[in-house]
Length: 197
Image 1 (cartoon, one colour):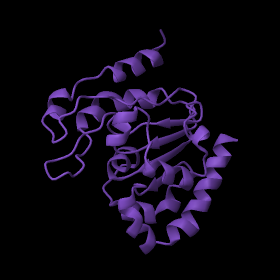
Image 2 (cartoon, rainbow, N blue to C red):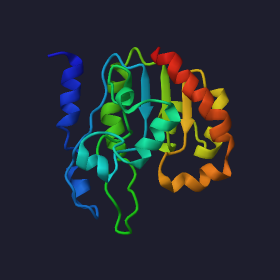
Image 3 (cartoon, one colour):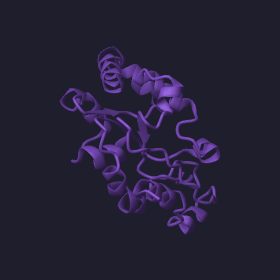
């Protein structure tokens, strides 16, 4: 068994957060969603799977995935081709909801346990799509708001693109920031095509 396969299996079998998840409003069991391979050229680093992904076992199987694929200019087949795209959120499992039905943050234990190991298995990765504050803190360092990072996208654009979450909750943000669609997205799509060519 290769080291990569062993790592994928270890993450898939991880139950470190079982007690934490059982105490959430969803009272669910861990179900890590593992979607990366050594040859991937693009990394999509996000927050954590949502409830729909927890059910499907496949990342971004929801409207936010449709929007993200549109942003990237990738077909569904390209997006889910692990030889092209690695999808590595800051937590591999759905963290659950609070009593007020709010998304819980990704448990830091997942990042501490797995992320450096996963990054070491992505030697071909040359472009990072970094979605949301938790992933941006880990991959880009420092303390900045998502707004500030996305506004500064040109300073990262050779190898990373900080993005807001593609959730419907950010539709108002997108309307307030039309430059995101007219200036950032064309450059992002062009860079994605360069990398996968």
